[in-house]
Length: 420
Image (cartoon, rainbow, N blue to C red; front, side, top):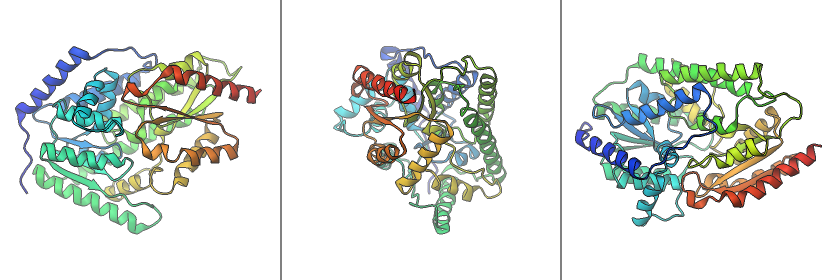
């Protein structure tokens, strides 16, 4: 198999295209939820990784949100999550250009906006040319088709990990472990660089250390009053993060733990007159902070936890990295029977003393929206109210705050009356 090659000039042109777009149509907004040093460090890390991907000497892998990153860091490959790039574009006010380009090229608005934004950005040459692409068979049905299309555009190798439906069978773990090893062997061939077992062991160790601190943060967030606003915590989205296995994320999560611990020990609010505690499902609109600001600052409710910050996997064994990563993938609550995820939701409701659940039904997300009725029936039996609010994470045309405002107010008032 031939080695991968990237036109050095191409990435320079792509970065120039992006900077010109940002200059012409981009906007800079100040978030009311960007208060922690850890959040600032994290934002800088994400920005640095994104810009490094345009460097002519960088090796870059496009990945979807669940593809494990530890293997890539061990091989000095930047794991660039295309969904994260879309969120960056939306927060910078430039996603609409990419969405319009996709639609002009006959990609339907019925498709998830993360997919449409990625396609538009690729067509306009705003993304850095990748050296390879890697995707899992879940969560999103669109991802497999998206990565196949991108592999054709860039003429690069596309890896698809077929994640089995259940984690109950050791043969399923064997199957996924084999795929991870095979993918690594293929990457070795096309990069002409062997995996260093010691480096992979070190990377797994860093991932474990970061997991340790983030798990402690999640434990601290059970405290009443809430030590950190959900509007800030949701952007960590640890379940989907591209930084597991990096050295920098250990420092960031350690800093986050220290800051949240200090806020828990010295709360800015008293425990008297407790606020409503909300569990948030899915992600958020990335083009503005209106929704979270309204709920937490105007309505006086706490988004106590977000399901995307779930740490579902056990500490991994550095001496058995591929099997550990296979288990990390296969134990994701989004894989398998819907009961697995509903059990996780019920566990969060109990641990975080949740009064109600808000589910942000991102347009185009079949995986989430198709299960909402089942979850609502289960929560109704448990006496936990749930409200489903429609919107879009990337496409602001499919989000109307005014339409949601009255519904959210009524939902929170109902919870407040029931608590009295």
